[in-house]
Image (tube, rainbow, N blue to C red; front, side, top):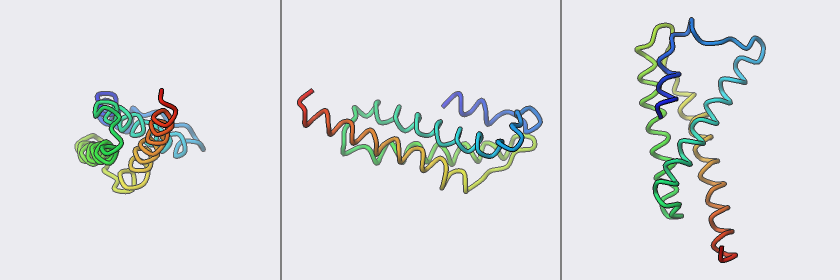
Length: 110
C-alpha cells in the first residue's frame, strides 16, 4: 500500500514515459500492484476460501481511495476506469488463482 501511495503521489511531470508502450506499461502496473495487494490481504485472512471475496473487496476499495488521492496530485486525475477495469481485474485474477492453488493443496493433503 505504501508503494502504491508513493507512486500516486508523484506529479505527472515526474513519471517516466515509455513512448509507444506507455499505456501498456502503466496499465500492467495497475494489474500487478492490485494483484499483489489482494494476495497480501488474502494471506492476512489466512487464505480462507470463504474470505477471498473480502481480499478482493479490500483491494478494490483501496484502489478507489488511491484514485481519489491522485486528484490532489499535480497533473494527475482520478480514473474510474483504472479502478473498475485494471485494479479490479488484477485483484480478481489474483484471488481466483490463489483459490485454485489452495483448493489443490487441500485436495492433495499438503
